[in-house]
Image: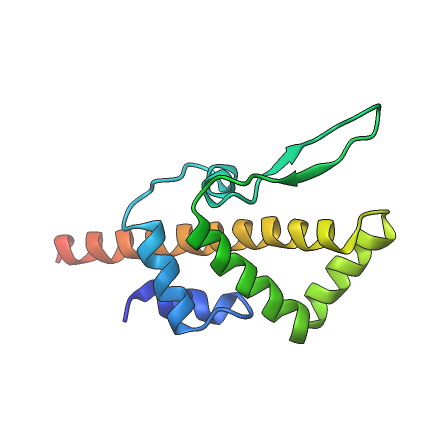
Length: 136
């Protein structure tokens, strides 16, 4: 069981050991993504503007890693089903004039940000433990 599985599953609601392990396998051992926006583009959850006649809309990118996108969708559905902050987030988006689908897209983008930050903290802890072992 990886450190990522233990660390991430405690921080993000809806992420268990299996999902965390799968995320760890997809994200890889190093710093492949410099920012959360790069990870969002890789996952296919970065919004793509589809404007027409002055109406600005966004949709999800149909490219990207579909397996990672599927994992993020499972986490989002779990959160929407049983976690009040996620339901409040999507309802706030719908009161702003977005559709429920657009609110769910925004939640997935928010989840990518949370996953990226948790992954960065995990990498920092791994580096610190390796430095402590080499110093000893």
